[in-house]
Image (tube, rainbow, N blue to C red; front, side):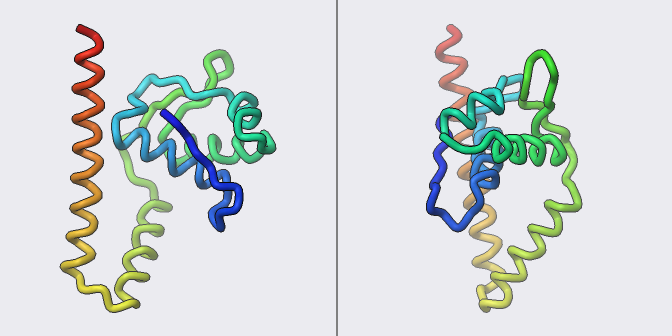
Length: 134
C-alpha cells in the first residue's frame, strides 16, 4: 500500500499517516497481521521527524487499529469496538453538515456511498489476494 503525504496540507502529517492507514485497513489493503514499516523507516521515507510518525502510530494503537511490539514493530491488529473519540468526531462531522443545511437524506446517502466504496475495495482486494495465492 502506498502512503502519500502532502507537506503543504492544512492537515497535520501525523493525521495524514493515521487516516491513510485506517483507509488501507478498511479497504482490505492492510489485513490483520500486516507489518507496517518501522517508525524510523517511515520517517526516513517521508523525510519527516520520527516523532511525527511515532505520534501517528501511537494514536493508531490507542484507537485499536495496530499493536506496537518490541520485536516485530507495528502490526495491524484491529480491536472491534468504537472509541468515544470516534463517536465525538462523527458527531462533529454530522453537526457540520447539519449546520450547512445539508439534507439528512443526502448525509445518509453519502455515508452509504462511502461504506459501499470500502466494501467494494475490500472485496476487490480479497479476490486479487485469493487469485495470487492459487
